[in-house]
Length: 187
Image (cartoon, rainbow, N blue to C red):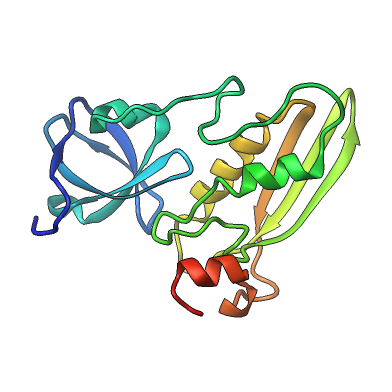
């Protein structure tokens, strides 16, 4: 591997998600890899001999020689307060910790979230999200949607969440927020 980043050798076997197919693959202890992105509690690594990029979840950070602080609530990078009714702002905060593994902008600022609804449910709140992807052929859709759902479910008072990937209307770069465009060097 010939990048400026240090090569890391996995300290144990892990299951990683291949990018962009979304398929899970076992990466064995000792596998050399380079971290290309570390955002939202996940890592994107390049593994040259295993067909490219993989997403590594927070629970496997130790295999990369990394430690992540996991707050009470169980999700990295989120400071949701306990008590009271679910606040829309808390859901958006969670969604902003979700990233496409190939793009260093969260899915909200990338314009991938089309809608978010909060519906009362027995003793709590059901959250329904409609999102899209930057390209219809991307196999990471289920992985990104699952990440968003898992993080939403950590918000106190949320009893269930559903995140659906939709294709209408088609996504375009016009949906990227000003902050997202700045991070991507588009301004």
